[in-house]
Image (cartoon, rainbow, N blue to C red; front, side, top):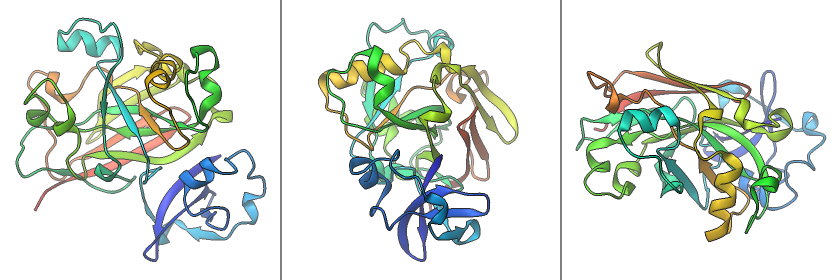
Length: 277
């Protein structure tokens, strides 16, 4: 199943993707995060009886618009480590992104007026499905509700002000998340996925998720040791080689660009780019 969050007639909703639109699931819970924290996704069997809202009548929101915690992983693909010239990390490099910095599928990413170094970063997002604390890697996949596409775009000049990434990762409208949460029954092994990022139709990043240094189970084990992961929390697993900051010449996003993050079995996240007014 594929779950989305959306705006419809001025109200936040969520539901299941169908052929011609979205099956509105607001009768089950107020938000997708609330459903995850209540009955969960597995208990929804009769989704085809839910009211249908046509695609033309919705605006996609980030999959979990109200995520409590978003942990992002830096320097986590082998090729990306090589292009940065950094040593292989001994532990996951973790920073945080705030929920209100994200936009949904089909919505524009925003170049901050204070920066000219806005960069794409295609990534796999993991959405937690049940409370996880001190979870081992062997059991970690059982704690996942599903997967989605993510563009953890970076404001590079602000990212490198200090050794801490937070400023460069939290400008409004700087992260794309969507279009859908694809449940784990469709993706039993995330390491088998293939990720591609396209800029204006040109492939800029392409890799198998198996190239991760710290794979999805390891990340859940590590994070759940120092933090309680709750349903609706998100782990953004890292970007592969080919980001604009490490190309020669460098490639920065500009107004009018089209960025697409495509992950096999997960879907395609599409965002245009616009300049902050």
